[in-house]
Length: 398
Image (tube, rainbow, N blue to C red):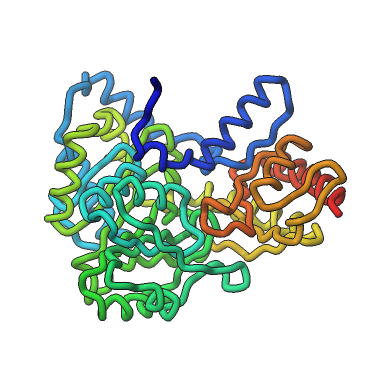
């Protein structure tokens, strides 16, 4: 008998990875699929980082490291936090993990008890809700819309707080909307949490270096709440190192120790060679590494927005960061091409994948079922062709 745990049966498959899997299957059949579903920079890891990894291999750096990461890496991360974010951490308040996704899981497993509520401003990254459920917590969505630039207000947050609220988790720049909370907005949000001293704030800043406003502000800088802010970051996005699998947190010592304890029983430390490469990345002045990539993404954003805005029924905000556009496509819900009815964004994504071989991700698992996520981590030629195909197929709906 094949009987899995209730835990795994409650867990949804990652929507982004599911669409990537379906895209690969169609490509294997010879279909010309344009995949705009995954959040992965289409750039190579910088040479100086690769050289550090090669040196580590040549120097036989192939043994276990401390669970929380090499001392020299954690020191370089603490220096990065101070230099780039004005956050002060000791090396013992840094825990390096196998990607920021594991960092988030460590945090939730360390802090949440069964039934604890976690506030999620919509839209949110697809894995947040599932990691919370896996930790026996309860995700509580705070609604937003394209008209509000996909941001929630302090009043929205306070109205969602209950006696069971344990955590507030958000990203800025946001995956999937690209929205960036300003310093003024974050200080207003912090004023709410000053009234609720038992609520933790998890700030996911993985897209820090792909910020078109050039004004990244870490909520952990705010003195009144900094002792319960956990800052999550990594090298996947800003340094084009998705496959290296290195994420990290800066947290109060007692939380860092708890995350270290959990990680020690699950994966232990991440790859030693990837750690040495990340150490070099952390030492670099960020703009010297990330500016070219950021500017390319900005040009693509503008191109994609121009093309999408030409399609009747597609409603976009202007993302200030990351590399996604998250248009409201609810205009097409309830329409049909005469054969297939589009009931929701899930249906729309499957319609586009099967009819014109463009892979997008439904907004439903991000908390906004009226939207779809489009990654512009692709060449301008592919983006133009993708929107051309999408426009043709959407015009068939009535």
